[in-house]
Image 1 (cartoon, rainbow over the protein chains, first blue to last red):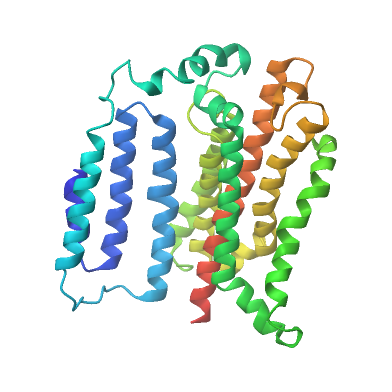
Image 2 (spheres, rainbow over the protein chains, first blue to last red):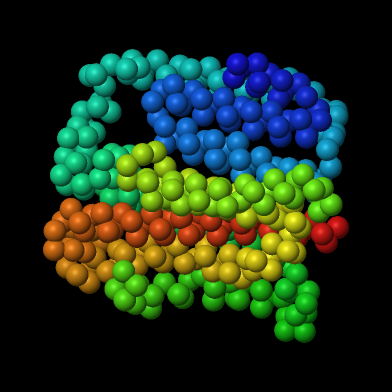
Length: 199
Length: 140
């Protein structure tokens, strides 16, 4: 199913259909993750891959038009690059431990500790949540920061700032970005101290 | 799409349930699949649906762009703020054990707050990005 969808994605030139098929591809992967018992990942894939990103792609299509331009260049060199990279990746997987083997390194490092101790160290039943939010709290904080950074990036590239810059042309183009720093960064220091009142 | 009765009524019926489901996913993350990230995306999806059906300008009256930006930043400092609080209370950065007298309750409280931070950021960022794409379309 996934392969058929991927091939259809390659063949189609109507980008609207491609966006829809990409959403379907995400939904199928979500089904695959569910079959592998990774419900949290499946949930995320369905919400983000099939939901939000499809909407954003459609939003982009409304800006750039629906038809893909016919490429005039020869596709031999790209094909070669893809084949070589693909075979290196497949070669790399030969070194991976066999799927589902209880002796895999992934099952012997920290995973047993998390699975056995989570119930009385953290006290919540969902181990995925306790790993994400507590044992691996730094990583999740990094992720949150990455999402925030994505917003700042899109903000700088698209509309928002430019519109303000044109409306405040008199105050100069540098006013946009500096406004944004005011929105984001300097909040962090004082607010960290204030949090005990809220929590 | 503002004239289509079926879409308008359908969206009006669906949106409260989408919001409620997002909150369920958020607060049930401790027990079942889900958590701040998924809940934030679903919560944002409700507002994006509203914006698609009733127009972005109407949606911006409900949820102003500045507020969404603020949410995006707010979540990160809630997260980092919890870390700073644990530092002040004498633990390591993001060691929730010190938040309450009982380490287990501390962990629960810490996870709740941290998930709230993730939720706020993801929600803000998703809606903000959508707004920016939509605003760009209107310029053309």
